[in-house]
Image (cartoon, rainbow, N blue to C red; front, side, top):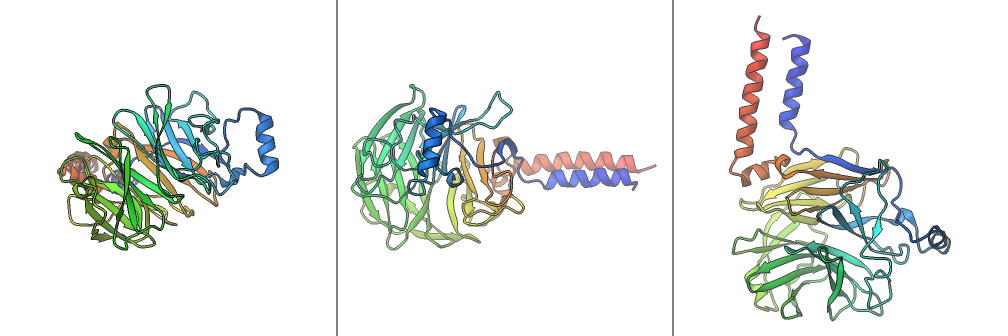
Length: 375
């Protein structure tokens, strides 16, 4: 085989082994910054210590339309806001700044009637952004909805009986009402909220400290998956019992990851994507099959405690931020269209059609290559 044909062969092999085609949307060489009401306010915040750009880190994400919503790690009083948005596209060549969401006025730590410390985010089927709010010393945790279709109309919908430690949530939209299942840091329970009843209740998880929650696809019976704090174990609970106001649940072990996940996202095919503390990769698992961890995406040399934040939009596109504590660019925004997410897990969910297409394409490719190699 000639050197040129050998190079073509290697190129073809590399395209076949690539699992996921991520496209970079934006990158930020240095720290993020906000779109401030005025430069004077920014200067004042820098001087009094209420704004430290190096402390901006994304924790949770939701996507709807042409906007990405991020909740930020507050680090006490080092940031003036905890909920922001980014555009999915920009007419400018410069990467956009963070826009406080829904407004500067609606973000105020210590004010019980404002968003104090946003955490978990989800968008429901009618375009409402659900926002968990951990509250503060003087204000109990709460839950907001923001109507993304109706001029970002913001509505406070529930105040919980406790303070702090809000983590993650998933939404269960049923013909009989909408439920939110909520994980709290370090707590041996999950919280269930019923929108129609405007009621919440605590469900004891019998020693399991849920550090993430993820919901199986809409086909019944649905399962709620949860991780165990500082553990690689993943458990599941029947959603039917949670809807019926049970106060106790018995999580059942379903599998163990190779590292400790802090976030697990589920797509409509039942494929779970997990990100891990201090790891430079995301792994996946087809939940319709026995637990088997698969590689999905890896960033060489990435060093960060909480490296990835990700969410799916209504079209099935996966959006992801990558945070690097040591190298530049410090932040990147990536996306992968659903059609290109051809990991082994996604292929299993599609009945093997992805691999069949790859095999057919590769057969044609190598047939042409062989014909070129024959004198």
